[in-house]
Image 1 (cartoon, rainbow, N blue to C red):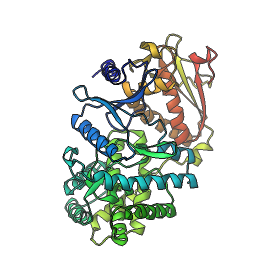
Image 2: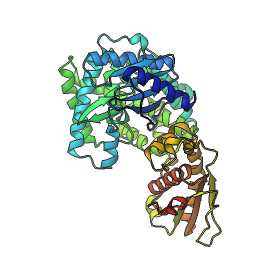
Image 3: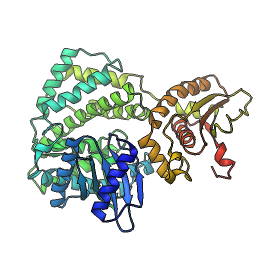
Image 4: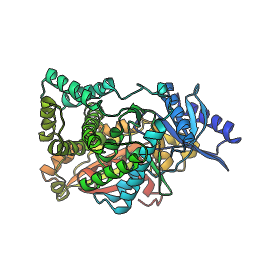
Length: 482
């Protein structure tokens, strides 16, 4: 479905619900799925609209949401739906996720963040236990329960998209035997409650200091430990071990107010679910990173390795898993995923000049005297400048950024740019070169090239820490401040 068709369907649904046409239809930042989100507003009403071609997934989310809302649980209210058009409207919970708090704190984990996490695990226990009571699990998609079949799907993704692509050696039959035993062991705990499935900080909104949950359409019946493991051992959350233990106990305190709990048995199985969640994470990072070559997922692999290393050193299970353990040690000991030495890079003499420009004016000259560098043509990418709401904006405005992320090939284009430019940067650092120029051009030098230049500058700064000179030539000629 085209962008115009999606926006028209959502606008019509909004008008049916609000009694007036929306004056703003703004694409929001993309999620990790194929769902597309918009913020729609009129004079008196605001809502978040979603478009998703997967009807069964939509049915699961809408059914869960209505059930949870009736229970007084912290989820968005559903305002309107049209499953034939694959669209629905839900309550706008704002733009602040728990993940955004993590980005602000870096490696420091302040007390106020601990208090937010404590609220989150309290609400999680309620969602799992009370939310699972009377829930129609028949709408769950793709399976009604996180059963052995679900675990084997995750193991196979891990095996084929991570172990094989990373060339970690293993005996396939012995690994299959271990996986079968491990799945049987994990299912010996209580698996009768609602399991969110992807309970991580991007799916937790914070509004007025209180947590709300979104994107639970993959939920099903399962073990309580899985969601807690997903939260406390999220690869890039970097929660200190003592705080993890404190949050685990705080969760159990909240859970004991709802059901009886054998803490010792719960914790034993908890670390098993930490491991299976880590294996699922490796599978995702392998598919998205090693297979699809998406930079974000490749950069996340070392964080997942750190979690597995901790499990291997600190947890034990009452089942023998020799081949799985050997394969995991192979991942930990591999040097394939070690990031480039940022200290070495940041102390190098290299300056990377990144410029956006308009092809109407021509490719900028290279002041270094080296005769130029990379030039990337963005003109094939879907142009927001063709649409009236974006004509006076630039590639730094939220509306344009979300348009390019949702409705263009920009992400795939930039992934290819990183694959081309990263080896050159590393080579130049090793050879003590002092200058590299990278140019992005589009028709007007206003939207696509500006965004692409900014994103590459951010990528290089985070990965290498080298000196960067960022120039937006067309905008600077208009007295635009960089």
